Image (cartoon, rainbow, N blue to C red; front, side):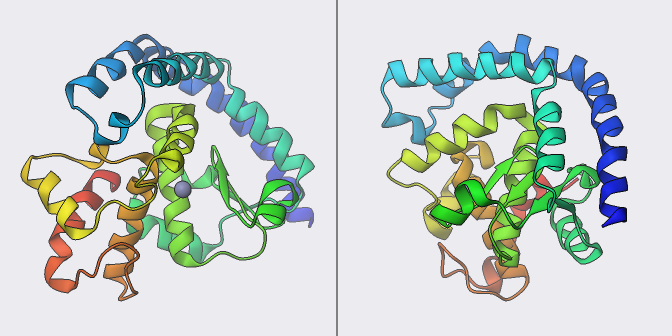
Length: 242
Ligand SMILES: [Zn+2]
């Protein structure tokens, strides 16, 4: 209890520092955001095909606004308040960190990752889990596969800032949703030298989750692939590992 309180207080300062450290990267992200719109069309992303032009433009505009909020440190402000108000929020255990690092290496700032297993608003009523920046909000313990899925959203946040939120929400509205199309879809995209970007933000999370499932001999969610296909999953995993 005292330990948790000390961690919470010290991280108020840590996050304040993070706002300053990350500000330049976030300004660049904001300035280069038009590039994402062009690449969305140029790469002909399948998951945008069912959306109207207006939806795509609207989402893109929304993301631009969100990137301004990143510059002023909204993620850190939000997390600091949530960390205090939702007192159960805790850092990762050694075991959780080891599992996370085995999949993502150092591409996630592990010190900042938090888990709230007593998240009353949302997860309790709707039996869902969501990621607010570095915090995984759940109600009750989650499976280790789900933990890996949620870490992908944190990895996305590390890479594209808060844009991961509208992109993941949009992904949930698509016909394919979380289903990345199984082994065939992975191979087809690999042959075109495509990466995770060809998949929506929930599919990305489930691809990495299924990589973890295959690696640890658990049943896969969207594919009946076996160890002989491991290198296909490894190809995508390399993108998230650093
Ligand atoms: Zn997800």
